[in-house]
Image (cartoon, rainbow, N blue to C red; front, top):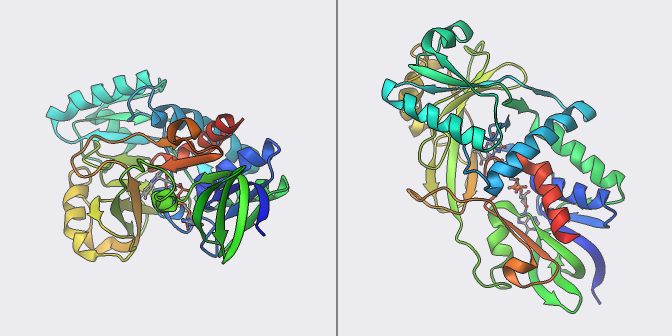
Length: 360
Ligand SMILES: Cc1cc2nc3c(=O)[nH]c(=O)nc-3n(C[C@H](O)[C@H](O)[C@H](O)COP(=O)(O)OP(=O)(O)OC[C@H]3O[C@@H](n4cnc5c(N)ncnc54)[C@H](O)[C@@H]3O)c2cc1C
């Protein structure tokens, strides 16, 4: 006999937790099932921890809408719950005068997305803010910031549990099937049934439903390495080059203790393996030196890696988030979250609202 549940969310990453919170606050009885022993052990704790402004994504895309909306929700939530964060601002730098046009294009894209606060700066203006940065011009994005993603996820978990929900660890979900009144599945060798199942399994989201629905989108994996920069951070703002194939370019971020780190690069891989490959060091030095001539290679220390779960492969146009309800796949009660790469952390609270509205 299966245990009957109302709403199951698979995955306790930041997106699964934010969706669970929105559903629990709306009165649903939520059970979060996570295969790992803690919250956020995959993409959600292996990223840049940047609160993105929403500049890069095509206007009207889910990424643009949910990032802009999610960013404001996130700042408000951080203030309310006293989550460690800082609105540092970021500089997107054109290191070659020929790339200044791309900065103008980016500003137009941002305005189309409702991000009105970008300021174009000359070299001198940049150097007043950041004496160590070399560039031909830059865009300042004042609404970009950083967040302690673990504190954020812990607060989300607290809200889920405080609204009557449950978060269970070491509880992998498998064998998801259509049932009379929703879905059934197994976890820990036991059968369960539920009215609603939200698939927030990150890089494993496709695997979870491959045998259940047709047309599961292809998943591509790209690892990114991060190097810590020892000593005092050379920067007060986040420093980003112009975006490159598959990523936003090897950028400099400060963490909340003020220490700098550089990353992530983009390397296409076939499997999830977080091992750090230090052979990328020289590529990092070359990329960083374009905007930070004084980089000291000896201060770069391998820090961590993260793996992006993408819906577009090498050289292909960047894909949007793919959030599928019944209208998208034909199974009542099932919501799939595919390709929730960056800016998924920034957008998480807005994604939660989006899924709640989809299921209302
Ligand atoms: C290198 C990198 C840099 C990034 N930088 C930023 C940034 O600066 N700003 C930003 O906004 N976004 C950023 N992102 C994106 C952001 O990290 C992700 O969008 C977000 O973490 C996705 O959260 P998630 O919950 O969907 O996935 P995950 O965090 O991967 O969580 C999925 C969870 O599902 C669990 N799971 C999988 N299968 C099962 C199963 N069968 N049963 C039970 N549980 C299961 C996993 O164990 C995992 O905990 C970055 C991502 C990467 C990789």
